[in-house]
Image (cartoon, rainbow, N blue to C red; front, side, top):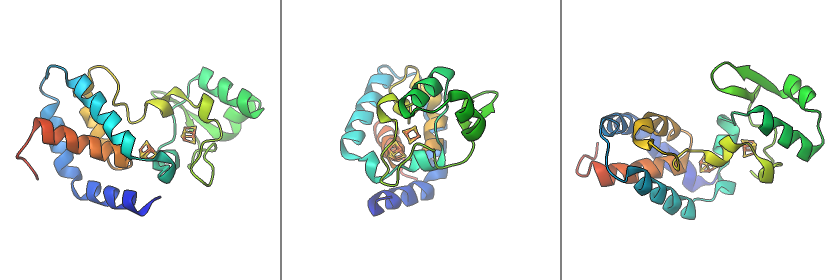
Length: 168
Ligand code: SF4
Ligand code: SF4
């Protein structure tokens, strides 16, 4: 991972308790246009962050996969879906199919994804900042700040906008 992103994650870890508290506090409200504001923050942050210099979600969390995600991915790489599921995946009752071990088997050394064009929807959505009703899901954002430099920067932008003046 790029050193700059390691430093962001270090900062994120230092501020983790504070971020969790703020996200919990902000989750009690229902601010008008919150989803749109956060979607804009998401765009601003990802215009600056280069995931190819990071890859930390692919190394540490990995995707939740649906049956169609698996079929699509296996078709792209010419693998038998059942065999792939047996060898590389494990079923979580709540989340669906997950990687048995990390990093994700599709992650290349250079942080590129072997199946980028047909990657699971979960990978495309992460860190889930373009969803509706995001204000009720800020606990998940706080969790993801521990792994994702972009999520951390988005959380700081939310705090700066909605809880200004509270810095720690
Ligand atoms: S499928 Fe690709 S984008 Fe998704 S976690 Fe694996 S390597 Fe990363
Ligand atoms: S989504 Fe976040 S954790 Fe994943 S590669 Fe991009 S910056 Fe890193």
